[in-house]
Length: 187
Image (cartoon, rainbow, N blue to C red):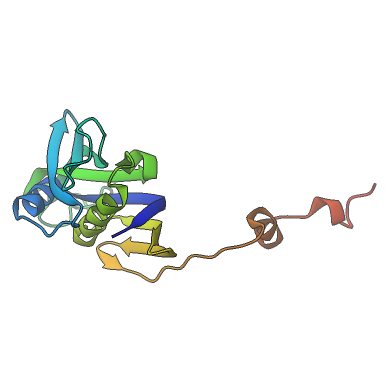
């Protein structure tokens, strides 16, 4: 399998426990990846690819996914909004603190290192399909073709790649004012 990741943007958030359970469940990984190791350093989770190819030098850094870990209070039901009718005795709504893995940022932030980068993108794509919050968008090259990926809240959505000759000019025509040809400005 060959491929390359050109653009990537992620706002994915999912419970850390779901990520850990996914990899403990022995998921089907791309053939170039033997395993994925999970390492936590303070509030950072690093998922590092272990290469199947033994010829890859042990000193070559393989691709890794990087996520920040945050704690969020999750309520069993919607908490009451402030400013509502005053109640003498408010019942406390059951809640718990849940750690979330947040894969947020562009390619260099979320998907680091070039060895096995495309196979690790495929792993991230599988994680995105499990996520109930956030979006993954990417432009990749698969078998000499550019392909767009867009996953929103765990669902694959239509996506396409548009190639334009002069992107800055087409954007200006749609959104901006052409000050050089503006009849209201005197010369």
